[in-house]
Each structure stands twice: as C-alpha cells, then as structure tokens.
Image (cartoon, rainbow, N blue to C red; front, side, top):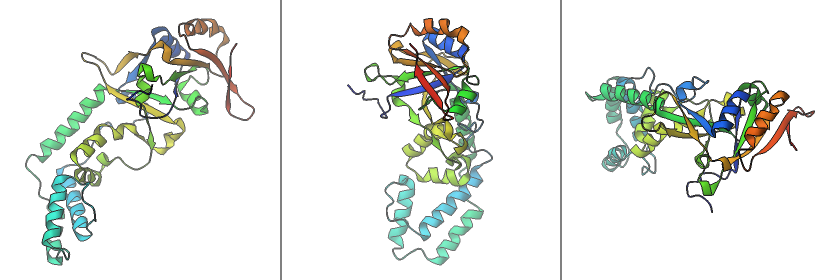
Amino acid sequence: MRSPNRMHERSTFYKYMSLNTAKIVLDSCSLRWSSPVLFNDPFDVPREVMPGINEINIGKALARKLIAELITPREDIQNLNPRIRTMLSDFQKSFPLGIPAGLIERFQEMVNIPPVGIGAPAAIQEMKDVWRGMLNNRRILCLSESPIITPMWNHYADKYKGIVIEFDCVDFLDSAWLIAKAMKYTDKMPLTHTAEGMAELLFMPDNKSIEYINNEIIFIKTEEWAYEREWRISTYARPNSTGQYSDLKFHPFELKSVILGPLFDASEFDEVASLVKMYPRAKLFKSSFGNDRKISIVPLP
C-alpha cells in the first residue's frame, strides 16, 4: 500500500561514503544527518539571510515594485499577499483609467525616502537571528539518484575506494526517504539575498513566503553541483539533542544493496560482507571502471 507521506515516485536512493564511514553505518544501522553549517559548499543553504540588506534597502525595493504594479497592473491579484492585494484593489477602483502621472511622481519620492516602521530594524535583525538558530537545529540527509556518478565516487567515496549504499523507499515502513525532495540547480540568487527578492517575498501570501524561507532555499544549489543529482530530506534535531549532527536509525529492511568501489581494498571484503549479512535484503555488488568510460556495476556471488 502506498504511504500517504510519499512525495515522489522513486524506488531507491544512493549514499556515497568512505569505507570507514560505511562500516559505522552498517554496524550501527544509522545515518548521520547534519546541520547545513557542516556542508562542504559554503553557498549551500545560506548561512545568513538578507546579507548586507537593511530596512531602507527593502523599503526602496518594495516602493519600486509597488510603483511598477500601479503603472502596469496585473490582471489577477488573487495570489498576492492580502495586504498588497487590498492596496492594489483600492487603487484600481479609485483610478479605473490608470494612475495619474502626478500621483506616480509622488510615489517615486517614496523610493528615495521610503516609509519605514520604527520596529523594522529590530524585526530584520530578529529574522536573521532566528535563521542562524534554525541552521544549527536543522538536520539534513543528502542522497543521490544514481550510483554511477564518477565525480561522486571521487569526492565522497574516498577516491573510488569507498562504498555506495542503496536505500529502498519502503512504503509500509514509511521510510524517511519517501519525503525526499530533488534539488533545484540554479545560479539565480535566492530571494532572501537581495532587497528586490525580499520585496518579492512581501508580495507573496504569508504562508508562501514562510514556506520559501523555511523550506525552498534548503533545496537550492548552484548549477555547478548539478552532477550530484542530489535529493535531500530535511528535519530538525530531536529535543535535548546537542551538537551539529544527529545519527538516526533506519530499518534494516530499507538497506537494499552495498556497492564496493572500483578501488575497494580486497582485504576489507570479509569484514564488509559480514556486516552486510545483518541486513535481510541486502546484496553485494562490485563497481569498476568500464571500457566505455563509465562506472559499471555487477553483482557478487
């Protein structure tokens, strides 16, 4: 039966790791979920929101966006923030033939001296502080959709000497990987990085902007990382948890296969094979450098 929590149609995911890490994973039946502050990409999950942005920058960007909306009103305003929607609707009713040029000029003055509430600086600082605290408590597991990505074997599996573990998305166990989300690879700046982006967020309904800040930017990386074909699961540290990572158990039935790297040390085989026997469904595979310049994988007897 399909789990109601399933968010995709994938059947399996893969985790690249060194041999030593694989031994720990297999022996403990657990995976390490990390805070983003430990990630190797300093731009992956912004360490700070609104860097170098203050209430004046945001006020000016918001004023420019409002003026643009008044000059060229959109046909459908239902998906906007209710506060913005009410304001635009009132103007459209008051000026059905368009906003007078003189009024637009007055609005232009707001760009130079935007009306900023007295509590705006504190609110922005609070948002930045909350984000930093959230980063420490966030726990993320990174997986890949393929076991034959050559750079992944090099970077994450100890230069081809490590292991890739395949995890099955088991509906009746409600596997954690059922809620994995694919990464979006883009070189566009997150909305939280520019004043214009923050103005865009303020135009969204509150639930949409909160969803973007809390979740969407967790699943954005620059295009240079697209080769990883990464999927990600995001949660938070459990109560009373300390440090910047958590080792969380998975069900033995979820481990589907163990793939030994092309340069795997044969002297380690017996120990790994013994650990794999702890998992009722797990099968052993060996990878190699194929003549077609790709990683090939074959089952072991």
